[in-house]
Amino acid sequence: MELLGNLALGFSVASSLANLAFCLIGVILGTLIGVLPGIGATATIAMLLPITFQLEPVSSLIMLAGIYYGAQYGGSTTAILINMPGESSSAVTAIDGYQMARQGRAGTALATAALGSFFAGTVATFLVAIFAPPLTTVALKFGAAEYFSLMVMGLVMSVALAHGSVLKALAMVVLGLLLGMVGTDIYTGTPRFTMGITQYADGLNFVAVAVGVFGIAEILRNLEDEHDRQVMTKNINRLFPTRQEFRQMVGPVLRGTGIGSVLGILPGGGAILASFASYTIEKKVSDRPEEFGKGALAGVAGPESANNAGAQTSFIPLLTLGIPANPVMALMIGAMIIQGIVPGPNVVSEQPALFWGIVASMWIGNLMLVVLNLPLIGLWVKLLSVPYYVLFPIIMAMCSIGVYSVASNAYDLFAVAFFGLLGYVMSKLRCEPAPLLLGFVLGPLLEENLRRAMILSRGDPMTFLTRPISATLLGLSLVVLVLVFLPQIRKRRDEVFTESDA
Image 1 (spheres, rainbow, N blue to C red):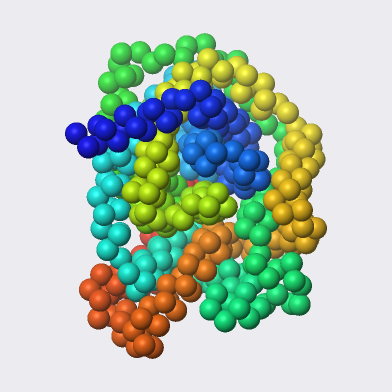
Image 2 (cartoon, rainbow, N blue to C red):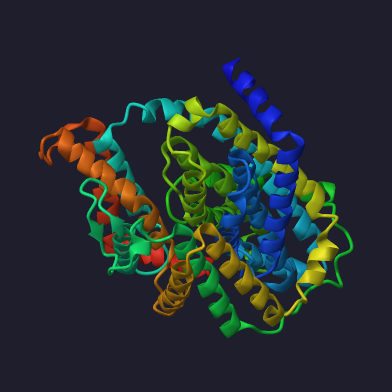
């Protein structure tokens, strides 16, 4: 009964005219971002963070959440029509989706992706509503030592699930932690790493770092790789799947939803890994594995369900523990902090309208997406013909105006330029920026809990090992770190990410 009462509260918040409007804006904008290759939800949310400061906290978070899972929907459109995933988690969808489009089954592929995503998103949101409150009850028993160990495990998991070299991912985490230390010491008030610039006394601007590393760097990469797009539009004639195709979808959608719901909680690239894992499983359980890669319906239904379920369940660690599961969730934490909300288990008890309003808005947003996406496919197809050289000046202007409007600080614009170049160089060196952003967000919290735990234990570092929960979390972190360096695990991991990027 308590769950029903909480959901009623959530729907009363989410169904207000203002929140419905912001949810609609979020999902439409997210779909648009997903459709246009090379922008991405992370860069978009980073650019739009300044706009949300003027909104109510619940409205801003509902809109940002809508952008995120809307982008998961939109990414499949480009993956199917032009073999260019709008989102990295849609890369696996392109394998069979584009082949279906070439065979004249583009409408069926798009409908399969939309319906599978809707089902998976609905189930995953239900899981958020069920499991988030009990997790917050457990998290309220955490002390400084447990929070420190939990954040260490989150950073280690982000390294294990990052693309490319483990050592490079570790280096990115360390760099993010160092960047998070810029500013004033939390206990002594001494400036650190500010290079004598008083504007950095409060630390680096989170929005400037995020926009630079993701937004500007993404623009530079896309200008380098801009090429003609062949859009498969002539064969979109039938959108609704046949009864036989529905029967073929059921199994992959159910399996993909289960896989994505579990893997989406993991810090790092849970949704991306979920889509590939779903594709691999569907290929193994299929009676006709030879069809995969040539237009198999299960190759679209399974991965699309998995990545959307993963996108929804990634909100569980964010809303319950204040730990981001991916760069978008890190940006959401930044938005919450700027709005004066302390991320963590207290959100459920202290601001139930905010928590349950976000959960209810996910159901409403998923319904909006499935209703809007299929009728608007023609519009999305037209947008794919817009050349990137027309888009990038607009995006650059939005980035600059948005970052400057946060604190009216010219140094933030210099920071955007610096981190944009840094992000571009990192991409050339095959260093993934996601661990850097997670390290930057968690760094101050990690330091605060480390020092608080040491003060409470009077300088005894064994406090992290004598407390059972803390010791268990650190032990799991060590096991994961050792496993990813084992030759067999490392080889398998490289194969997974190589094929998922294909």
